[in-house]
Length: 200
Image (tube, rainbow, N blue to C red; front, side, top):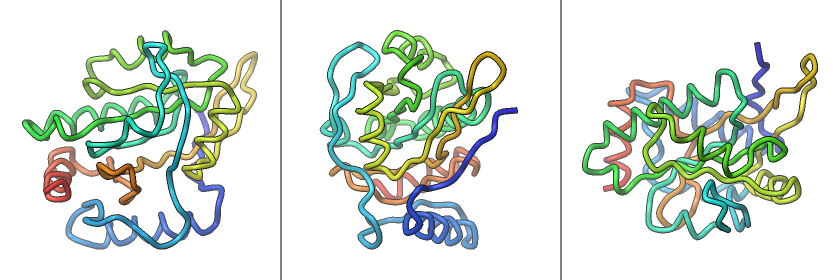
């Protein structure tokens, strides 16, 4: 089974993420924070990538909507499809508020995840409708991963390889600023309800 590294490359972010998740788990529900986190390292920033249609994309696509940003890859056997399916259920449960929410999936495997591959992968009916897939050159992926403090590395497996990577869903506000890690292991309807509260 693929090894999954839920690990943040920078120690300060690890403390921040663990602290936020501890607060979520210790309370009555796993609701994301209701205001942007301003302490600790800055998460997010400018990037220049390519979407699944082959068009250039940058950080401006985060503006105007609440966005769940998730790093992974299409050959991922477990965590990535499970997380995207959970986000798909959350998005469906938002009902009319779905139009205020979007999912951005950034590949950490640019060697295999071409725009065409991303487009085919994200077309699954189990995944969020309208999910945006992003890929780029190895240097571009390294840059955006650094901006989000995401760790990833190639791990040989037989004649192929898997990617160990950070498995955090980053909730960004309509200004493109990090709000909190989004816990998609909770019941989708519960996550959707708390997203409504945050969005309002």
